[in-house]
Amino acid sequence: MRTWKFWRRLVIVFLLVIAGSAVTAFDRHQVYADWWSASREPTGIAPDPATVTEPIIHVYAARAYNWRGYFGVHTWIAVKPQDAPRFTIYEVFGWRAYRGGNAVVVSSRAPDSRWYGAEPTLLAEIRGDRVGEMIDRVDVAAKSYPYKNSYTVWPGPNSNTFTSHVARAIPELKLDLPPTAIGKDYIPDGGIIAAAPSGTGFQISLFGLLGVMAAVEEGVELNFLGLTFGVDFLTPAIKLPLAGRVGFENTTPQG
Image (cartoon, rainbow, N blue to C red):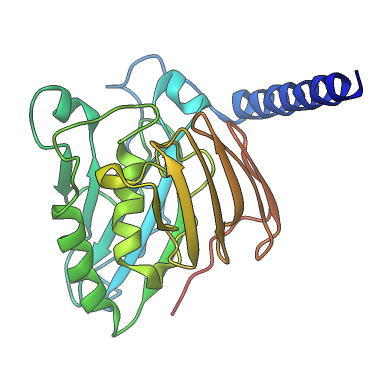
């Protein structure tokens, strides 16, 4: 009887957490009626390449378009080599895979543009002389992504699986993807154990549906059916599905 009461209370707490996260997500996310009319304008986060010559790597996240944005984000990587006149963007578009094409897109769009209305958040920034070699590794990792011809919104592989794949190849980024980056825990090539995307720990995951992560940068995370619950001790925050981080934002520029 006591065991049953314990599990019943645990389920109630779990449902209350999900409900609270859902309310927060609905409050934060705005749905736009038409994707073609939603803003893709730059937000002023990224520096102007005309005035900043040093090499830069940025990683961004923004709420996904329409109803998907209540649950998760789209992430992408932007790089600017030394003296380059523009940024190069690496990301994955699911519709290209659905049509039989290569889902990995390399473009020169504004790195900090809104994602169909949603304002982006800068997740990581790294600059300096040593970044040039890292940019080359970003390109190699992006082109070696094993799921370039497939895409699954949940639990992956998707755009966040791509970003975590590249991040593992560039551990200097120490990238802590948000808990709303559904698909980040989908380990490529059917693996079960891998380095955390930040490179500061390890994770175990069964097809992105069930797993655990322990890392200095990410903290401790539990993945259940693609939903992430966790605690970040380095930059104090609670990590919740739908709502994301509750606490301090983990966006620390690195020189």
